[in-house]
Amino acid sequence: MNHGGEGVNRNDSRSGGVTYKYFGAPDGATAARVPISMRPEELGGDELGQGGLFAKVKPETMSAMVLTGIEGIPLHKVPPLELVVLHPDYAVVRLPMTVVDPLRGIGEEEVGAAAFIWSTVPDRGGPRDAFDVYRMLHEWQEFAERLNEAGHQPYCLVWP
Image (cartoon, rainbow, N blue to C red; front, side, top):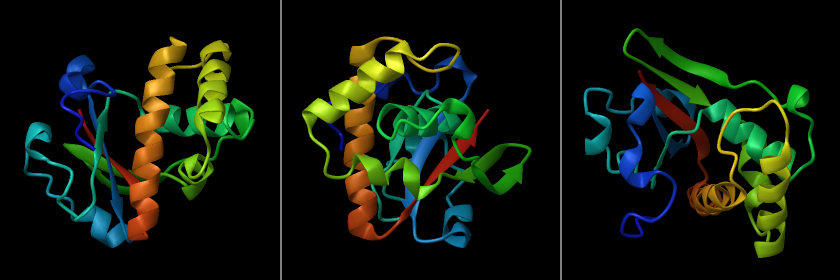
């Protein structure tokens, strides 16, 4: 997954005050045990034997980006996230599998079309530039493949 700094905000994951660390785990109990005492830059993505993904994009935005851009689901119908752990210093949320499943097995055209669609959706958060969205969706696609291979569900660890 590490492509020498390429990709989604790899070197800038803590700007804006919040860090989002996406990772895979077989279940919520395992996800809740992510080592929270470590700083985000110390989490290499393999703490659960599963490559992770740092991003500045909120999990609810990531969900909407995939579901709206690829599946055509309106923003108001994107399913909510499931809270696994809420602590004063961090939170762990589970994303629905519908956020990663649509990306498995689609080609460049579909990813490009999804990036364009998302870049034109009014009144939404997240990146606006279609190329930035395209790069993010590609990283998310690789993440989806790793989750599938490991039989894991997607989770996000959030630090303020």
